Length: 352
Image (cartoon, rainbow, N blue to C red):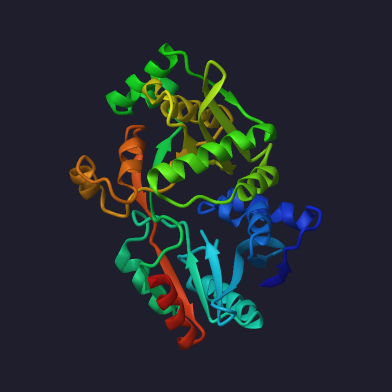
């Protein structure tokens, strides 16, 4: 069943890459974090990427794109599968065969542990079922995640007026207020990346969270655009007030990054730019819009605490909840440990 292990370098996009990306786009748990472009992005910033796949009757049926990185002066080498593997999790034999091949790839590259975070929702695979599956496959279920496990998904299949109607009243008001107060939104180009990066850096300083270096966002846009990424800029009198970068894989659009100015906030530019991106994603046929990351609490706790909490992602939740949608949580992470000392080093480093 194993076809090959493909090491992704900065080389021309191949037929194998196209086949893999079509498989990712069509898989029910597919994600932009498993695409060729994402692997090439991470390759530019300290990671190496390797691809393992399984075929049946010549057709791709399962696979994983594995990222590997060294840290702690080379003492810690981590293998990581973001939003993967892509496999039929109900088929224990298929899962076992694929994970064995992933183990082999990790062993060849001297990884001390493997962390995987499949894009599986808890509503489909409850925690008890996930823990049992992990035990059967020799994995350790773990709450230590790299990607945000909790998000909000907006269904884009209803008419626009129904999507608006599902939003909180204040959000609908702010979208209309932005238009009334002269905010316009345009789709940006590569030439607008300095605007986007300046707004990202400003937002990071204002809200005290880390953002990537401008080179990272430029590389992301260049690798995904124009077919799988779009940039939107909200302006007032030609002055940029807010910007977001959106990515598309298969039926899913993902709001991955955005920033806003300290000026003219009363004109609600962040609402205008988000609504423009939602409309764009729906118009190009996306079935859902992923707002990507809210505090990791059950929905009833989010709703009971969002008005009084300001730490962490709580301010983000207040904004995102207004757009309607459904809070969804992944099953989280699972680890395969190849070296216990490395595993302890990893947790020590994460704790710091």
